[in-house]
Image 1 (spheres, helix red, strand yellow):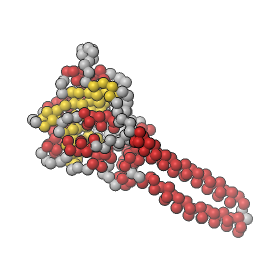
Image 2 (cartoon, protein in one colour):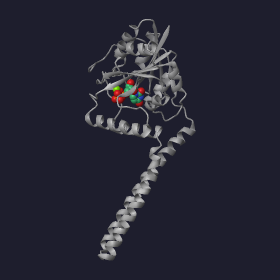
Image 3 (cartoon, helix red, strand yellow):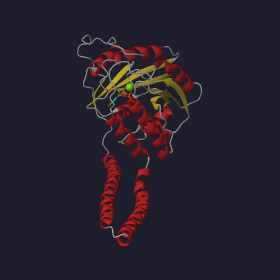
Length: 327
Ligand code: UDP
Ligand code: MG
């Protein structure tokens, strides 16, 4: 019988974890002839997520959890989940029910019967994201597609069901600075896309703010494109031309019109302009160097502190859903 591993990264998800389990359990058990396992990854949560996972995994033998020694980030959690999975298919799902469990049966049909290696959800719309985040995300995906020439479109997230073949290919990519959307695209494989409407998380709050989204976007570009390294060359050529033009302009001001202020103005502007660009270029080089530095250290992607332990008292925590914003 086929087995599906459901991988769920969780960071401070005490409000929604049991509701997620109930809804997803309902959807997966409705699929005929399919064994399943849940692999929850507690990514260093500071709330009662781990307590709830202990109880859940104690009550259902198909549930397993790993708990990290600290917050390593969703990328590390997904990697850990895939590494600990044993199903011949794996699906990655957010704990907040923004990835509808109702898509599991059509996804399974695609990978099991239609010959696809991967069936991925494509989120349509950005309800609940706010206009600024929506605009920035759309712009980022346009830029990254151009820079990397890889298929990383807006809405194509981590919610996908994959064959063991594809999972093994992903696990071969052991880089420390992980950008899984790029990794999915890099490994290739035949993918079917299923569109779904974006919904607000069922409970709890998003772990992303504008700053972390910016650094995630930057991470994506640095991990899969070396185009920024060409910037110094392009800008250098442009600035050489500009400096000739400004120098010429200064000389004309000086000798034809005897305007001393003109040349001073030009020189100070050029100095500021050039030094800021040099700083920017050094920053880009530094970013690539720092990534390389971390890769060379060969640090573990995650560290597990606890795995599938028995709860101390299984009746202390009530695992019935606490609240639900909207589904
Ligand atoms: N997550 C995680 N580690 C983190 C941040 C998030 O494991 O450091 C998990 C989180 O619990 C959720 C999923 O990643 O299951 C997506 O996070 P979130 O809903 O905050 O992201 P958004 O949907 O706002 O992009
Ligand atoms: Mg979410």
